[in-house]
Length: 135
Image (cartoon, rainbow, N blue to C red; front, top):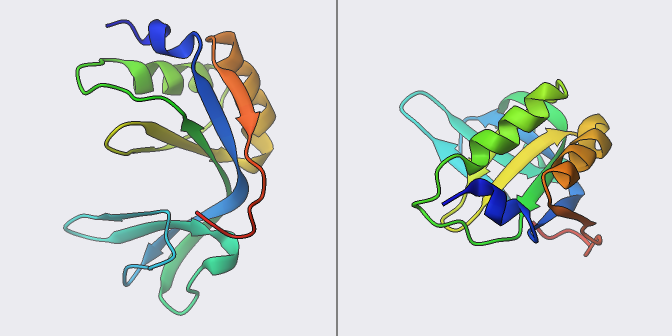
């Protein structure tokens, strides 16, 4: 499988919400994503929902780019192509994968350049409408 086949005709949506990536002492029920490993817990949560009392470190100002397509487990190199294309534009990413798709968080100020770069790979870019506080 070629990742290019998924970019062509695929859609990437930019979240309406702005997120914080938080190193925390506990999980957060409002989190978009929770990552636990042997040494820390990280949550990705809408900025207005950060649990300041539990936060150890906070990185604010991230937008979520969601690839609105089912990506099979056998597909090799999709996220590498995304990260490489954005790295070429000096855009830092925080990558997350769900069972069926990938999400990349980029700094709010990098959204326009990231969208332009991903469009050059063949993705249609959409902006999510603010639905009033959902993840």
